[in-house]
Image 1 (cartoon, rainbow, N blue to C red):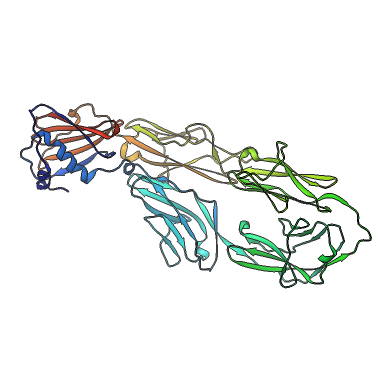
Image 2: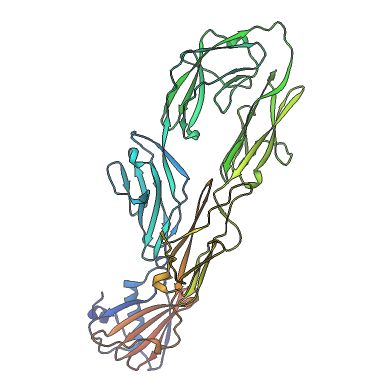
Length: 525
């Protein structure tokens, strides 16, 4: 609060001939809605041209940026799931939540309950950071971030935090595999233990206690972990056991098992063996993520591998689109879109060739179809506001659930009234007779299918009703003598300075940040 003496000290009269005057000034962009600044000591006399000084004095206390007047908007995206190991000191277990618009306070919830800081889990309410030092049973579950300012609450989509794990191989004796020189030989990785998440896991093989098997054009491992000698060499028989191992990158841990004794029978003669498929693996991926397909051909000598797209075009390494690895046996679509879905052809080529079909399924959580879906809306008091959330699934996917609606992270109370009207199986929400304080906020639409959850937000901003004349101002009485009112009027900003017993002046924003101050009347208010 600024005292009467402080205001009086800032007022420096500007010479006036008694006629209404307009003075143009340039200030930083701002938007204030219905702010009252009261000076409790009487200002007995004042030149109306001093409105400019009074405006500047008041604005130093109450002017805020336009963003400060808006509900928050979530600015972070989140994975469907995060994985951390149990009972391990974590060094990079931080999830950031960021929203824009004004001063924001953050809150995290797990399984619907607010997270309270402890020595293992902490939330920074100012930055939105969720940090784990060590995971325990109670820390795994469904998480969601809430970002709140004075005008509403934005929320993240819910996501899971699951346990990273790598179990040991079961105890078992070795087995023997017999193969013939130049022919295909497969050594299974028996009883391979679960390794979660798959993206952090890799199968490796070794011979004896320390010699790692090198993967080459002739030797490879499939996505099940089985080792393939695409044609067998007598040097593959060393007299030592082959062992399958699983390496977990995040946990920096490996486990070993599936001991196998390999015997290679020498061939009586050498002849070419035409390519033939010994492995293929279809792929499934989400829109925007990597899709991985694999195939493997045996033969002597080792076949070349070629990939052909669903549009019958030969695929080469293409930055940002395709990556071919593992001697041609693995094709990675780097950023999958629905048009990448389909049957890919994998060819094993020698003097003769063989081919197989490998399918890529591109899937997604529910998507929005159509124009103007979940767009921010600005309306005037008393008008209706409509939000569209036309959820759909990709072709060949199960349909999404009907949308559920929230406001500021809380389920809408539809009740039996007419405040909220939903039609088209909840895909259209109308907020009727919009009021500034009660209806301003962030509206959320949620839907899910077998592949994930869609959460989209839109802001409802309410304009204060237009001011038609100064007669709309309420009469002020009592000990309050100076009132400064900021009003949003359509697309403009109007500052009304009312001094009891003296008169009113108006300050209006013009384009490019220019404002005018006008002495309207010298009559009492």
